[in-house]
Length: 125
Image (cartoon, rainbow, N blue to C red; front, side, top):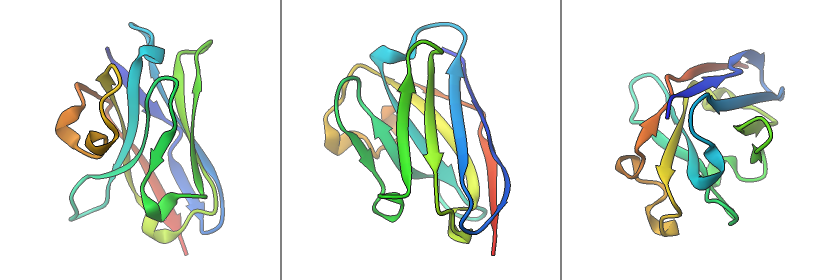
């Protein structure tokens, strides 16, 4: 699995961005796919995770603004980010874990077997 995250950029507060995570090897629809982010000087934090065929789990701070979707035809997992805030500024990473782990483990970085290289999202006020 070689994950590639894309779609980051510089936007203003209130704008939207759509991040994509793709893999040219294995199909992603059998993996639990997650997004994490890391702001300067901070720990990498969980943003959202989608288990195959199950509900998506979100960080409370992004719930209602961010949405994870899967495009199986394109073998991508997307993160639609609306109503962006300056505190959303970070490098965003996609990650993949085999199968469908229990929900309480989804926020744990060491759950994930594969990581993309990250894409920068900067939100100006």
